[in-house]
Length: 138
Image 1 (tube, rainbow, N blue to C red):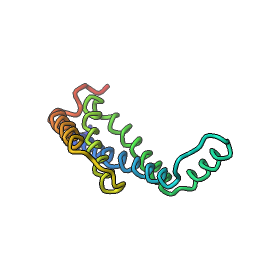
Image 2: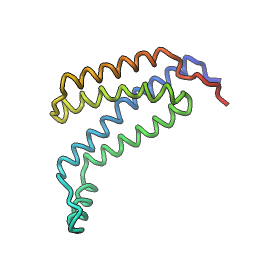
Image 3: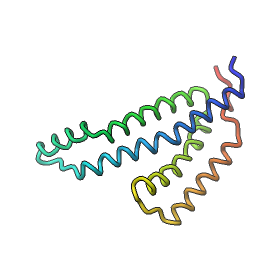
Image 4: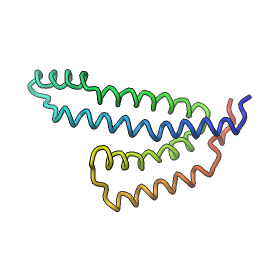
């Protein structure tokens, strides 16, 4: 039998992985698509050329790899913690998205957006004060 302390540690560790790799994967996808530029869907030759560029982009492949790690971690944590805990706790990624966008992509983040992110993080703190596992496992 797995101890509750071990379960909590695993849960929080996987949520940390989720919070970091999902936004990082999306940032890499964004960086790759910025390098590729706008994609024209007509004529079809342009779409094929864009597809070739996407498949050859290192940033795109790093982003896809990070998002696969995210999905595996997400499935694992959902197997031992309640969705009503995991989803709000993983919302900390909104803050990571803003930080990565600001520092890696050079995006401007308005003060109002930072306040909104702060409200989300406060909500996550409140949810985090509850037990990750509120239902009995079968």
